[in-house]
Every structure is written in structure tokens, then in C-alpha cells.
Image 1 (cartoon, rainbow, N blue to C red):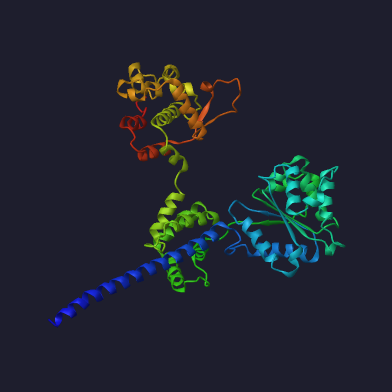
Image 2 (cartoon, rainbow, N blue to C red; image 1 turned 45 degrees about the horizontal axis):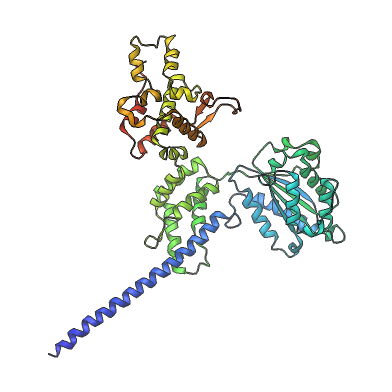
Length: 480
């Protein structure tokens, strides 16, 4: 009997122990979830915003740019410069880092910034309104009427003066997509900005960002004569070892991360990934195709989205799958979402390309091209003696759908025409020339933007693709 209380205590103690372990597990899961949330926030901010992270391989260009901006902000010296490089080379990141450092010096409180984009500000009138808004001079301008663009811009800059040149507010103009501003009428905006930067007026720095190497050829003579001809070229000149180093630094957590233990384990995992052979193979493939940091950030962003509380660290499998998603053929993915009718039209176009050797086609040829192919082959030695063979193996859409076994695909011509137009909207086919009002849609020449490999690979992955459609796509005209 004395053993009974002991037996009762043991189960109760076990229950308490299980409850405590469950609470501890839940607490650990919450802490880990909070850490993962902070990791994703920090890394996504680093990947998406150009002001975060470090500059790689552009230290010389950065030093040149920041010295130029400091001369404008501190000494009131006007300057102009073009930053030239391919897309994704870090032009925006470079200027953002330079402006961030400039704003940290004491005299920067009076420095004004104006950011214009050639894609948004498509004419000088829109650009001038944006300049007025960013300089906070809407109330100063009011209902004033100006005789010219130059008079309006000069009035805006005059309103910023506080005595002599050294005490005027320096203004930094950043013109993104600079080459598009060169297409404005008479290049009035560029002329006036460069003219002011060359004269003893308000301290002004004009910084243009462009990916065109021939940008100076686009400028008018009067604009080119007022430009300082300073150019900063950005090229992704680093090699694969540097690319691995960038990969490691972009994924590593900073020292000030709240959860020190988790940060240490995360950084150890990143170090192991940077030394893993399979990860090297993935990064080497990515590097061979595109080595700019924007594409690397996209790869890491996709891989980062796969981590969960149960799998809190990145693996080589995550990077491999992210690479497959990033390198996937976008047009082949579009084919996966097409209807069977649209697939049949693409197959008909494929066969027409094989017969006519990539010559353009029109809807009528695709829909009912049997007589055209018979006419094309009738004057050659390729015309078989038994023309019934040609009819049986004719790869045209109309012949295919008229078979009794394929009555399910027997669509009316307007429906087929609608599917044909949908393929054009998806940019899987494109017209060879601009569409005129009087031209008939059925006879407008088109070109297929998919090659045979893309079509066949897409058909292999097409969900529930009918067997006869797949066989029709694989049928050849080698017998000719």
C-alpha cells in the first residue's frame, strides 16, 4: 500500500515534465520564427534596395564620384558627369551610396536633390513640373507665366539663392535613362542644365545614368559643347572567385543581429554553402549567363523564400531549385497555359516553318494551307507521285481537325481566328510589318517566335496533352 502514492506521483510528475517540454518547444519555435522573420526582412531589404550592402569592384569610380559631389556641396563648384554601364552593373547603387555619404557631412543640410527618369518625364513640361515639386517651389511659382523654359528654370534656381554663389543652395540633378532625355524636342532641358553648370550661377551637379556607349553622339552640338565630357564607366570585371565572395557577403547576417546564436549558425551555414561543390556548379552556371548583382539578388531572393521554421537554413537544393526557376524559359511556360486549340495552331505553324524554311505565314495558310503546300511542291521534284500521301500527311491545322477521330477539335473559323489573335497578344507570334486599317487580318504575314526545341519541350510538360496532338507535333516530312 505505501507504494501507491509513489505510483501516483510518477505519472503526475511525467505530465508536468511533458507540459514543460511542450512549452519550451513552443517557445523555441516562436523565437526561431521571430529570428527568421528578421533574417528575411534584412536580406530582402539588402536585395531590393540599392542603398544597402557594399559596393563591389567600383571603388575607384565611387571615389571619383563622391569627390565631384563634395566639390559641389562644399565649395559651390558646378559639375556634370555621365555614369555609363550595362543594366545591372550598379549605376543606381553607386549614385545612391554617394548621395548617402554626402548627406552625412555637416554642410549637406542645404543640398537639394532632383531625381528625374526618362521613362516617366517624357517631355520638358512634365520634367519642369517635377523639378518644381521636388524643390518645394510650387508656392513661389504660383500663377506666374514664363516666356520660355530657360526663363522658368532660371527663376526656380534664383529662388534658391542666399547671397553669393558660395551661400546658394547646391542642387544635384540625377537623370536616370539619360539617353531618353536626348530625344526631347531641341534637348531644351539638357541644354539649360549644362548651360547653368558652366556659368557662375547656382551650384549645380548634373549626373546622367545610361547604358548607351554612344550617348555623346545623341547630343546636339550646342549641348555637347556645354557638357564637361566626364564619364564614369561601370563594367562587371570581377571573376568567379570574387562572385563567390559577393554571394557569401550578400547572405551573411550583420554583427548587430539581435539573436547572436542564430546569426552565428546562419553565417556558418552560409560559409559551408560557399564551399559546397554543388553550389559552386550552380553559381558557375549563373555566372556564365549573367554576372550582374541584380540577377544574383533575384536568385538569392527565390532561395530565401524557401526557408521555414522547420527548415531555417538555406541548402544547396534550395539554390539549385531557385536557379532552375530563374533560368526557366518564360515562353515555354506560356505554352503550358494555352488551350489545345492554340497548341494545334502552334504545331501547324511549326510544320509550315519546316516546309517553307522559316518564311513568314498568315492565318489562312495556317488554317487551310493544304492547297498552298500542294502548289508549292507541284513545281518541284519533291512532289510525290501519290498525292494522296501528301494529303494524309499534310501538317495543316484544317486537315488535322477534319479527321473524324478528332471531332472534338472541330472549331468554327472565327473561334480559330480568336485563338490566333490571342497568340499574337501573348507575343508568341508577331506581325512582320505594321498593321494597317484596310488590311485583312487573315492575310497579315506573321513570324513564329518559338523554335522547335521550345515547342517540343513544352509539349512534353503540357498537362493532359492529347496523344494524337503530340504525335502530330512529332511527325516529320522526311519522306519528301
